[in-house]
Image 1 (cartoon, rainbow, N blue to C red):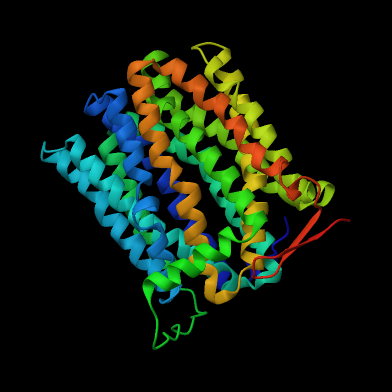
Image 2 (tube, rainbow, N blue to C red):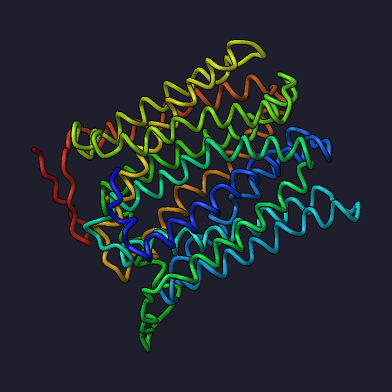
Length: 418
């Protein structure tokens, strides 16, 4: 990739904020469940509940968050969300230092950080078109996806080292600090939105319904929502059990677990570089279902992991999974942003997040329950095999053959074959 958007001061500030925050988040993604498993000796069910708490906010506040974001300046909303996440995460090492850390606190921190993440993510996806223009959305999303992918490589290695050196609670303190630095970078953005004009007859419930109607009346958005929600459900089953499987069943150290996740992050990095040529070769619609099929097939190698060479065979499968998911995500998010009117962006993104992330806490709970009663390895197989089902809504829709997708903001969808 050439410099492109990175020449722009404001996008560079957003890029910097996202880089710092993503690396810190990778620390917590590994540290929080490891604190539960290694420090508090949590059961598989408790880890599943923790995974559910971290994503439950998308069910609880997802829809109203979109309507509220459309009423607010999105940059300011992101800054507030970053500061609040820093405060919440800082409470974990503080409670540990006072010998008062318990699972209920981790549940609360996971839930409230999830609420902040809902507002941050909806604001960020709605702010990007304003910042770079809709003609640069694919490049902007690909570069930000590159940030996330790179952090998946370096973040877990840093996390594993920090956890081994300092322990999980102090590693989480590093993430708390990263959110404050992210907020500072966002504050440096010069391009400021005008405060949205609130209509005299504005009604939160009616605005929420407008967002729902826009998404559900568009058959291509419906297919994307069904694919992503199915993938997230089974992916959450996998995520709820994967660290337990690596730490307990395979008896790997935090440093090795961190290295494993860093290696698997190579897939997301490769996907960020491959998305543009992939879409050019296959077209937008086929790129979505081909990438998701490849991701599902790669994930089937993960339950084969053992504490020998098969650990790295599983890592290779996770690399393939990462490539597929990144290509799919950049393609479908850019398409969604491109077809949505500016005044509906927050509600569209929130509605999609409500639908596609709303299955994640359910998947986390199901994964925890299955791991408790059926066993951790068996639950991993169920989650990985079930992920293949996510491709069905795409191949059974017009997306299967459509190289270019355009849509009016109404129920009708125009499709172009080239």
